[in-house]
Amino acid sequence: MTTIHIDGASLGNPGKIGIGYVISRAGTQEKRASVFLGEQTNNFAEYMALIFALTDALRWKDEECRIFSDSQLLCEQIKGNYKVRNKNIYPLYVLAMHLLSQFTQPVSLTHVRREKNTIADRLAKEGAAHRG
Image 1 (cartoon, rainbow, N blue to C red):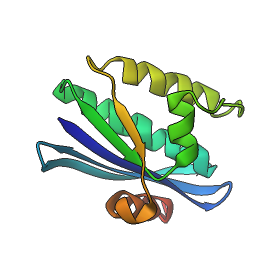
Image 2: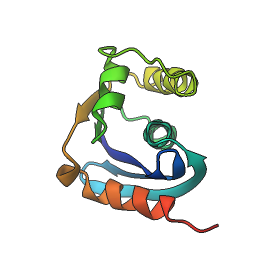
Image 3: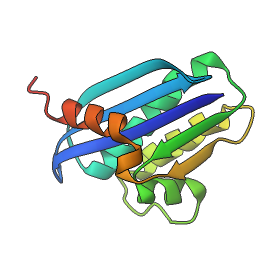
Image 4: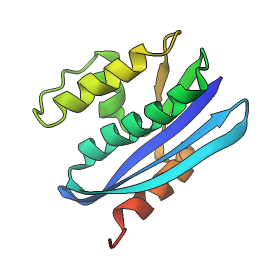
């Protein structure tokens, strides 16, 4: 089973954004990443964190995948409970849904409090603070 913790951060909204994610398999950390992505909104960063993490996770071809995010909006949009109204986010939503469909089993996406997502949160903030 693959477990993923994701987060996006923005210094200002819009502002400099970064993403952070941690991928673990069978309790062993396989990858952690912190990426600066320029200037955009926080919601854009949250979606990009999901997309980057899913792209990396698909290489292991695990049947089960659990994702944890502290973005309630992202979780509810992916689950279909909220509509994606932002025209800049919608293409990211479509891409994320496509990546999710590549897993052989349904992927669980769980909203967690920031305190339960500390490593991804720190990595996202480090990415946003990048001074390229």
